[in-house]
Length: 145
Image (cartoon, rainbow, N blue to C red):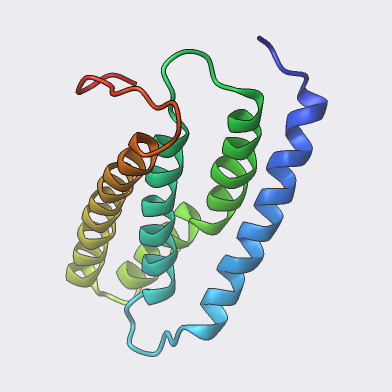
């Protein structure tokens, strides 16, 4: 079923506004004096975990329900899309390179990518447990989405 854009855009916008404000708050609370982008790392790793958990927990065999669709848009695309930040990640790397910290930039990139991947995988595993315990849940075979 094709959903009207007018219904989906406000859901994404509302979630995105909240997620962006949360990320902004984290950057103002977390100290940055060490030269390591802790706020960016924290937002991206937590966001990757929560997105993996959310999308896996919402997954059901068959069609997506309207409620799951709305939840995915508000929390996944909107809130977590606004909370995580590729642009800050790229700017952090650029700043490190511009300061002559090539080694630190390479290490930052590797840590961010690996930590994000591991966090997303952990979120998927947790989401599968949530989904398996939901009423009416059916087991899925490995690799089935």
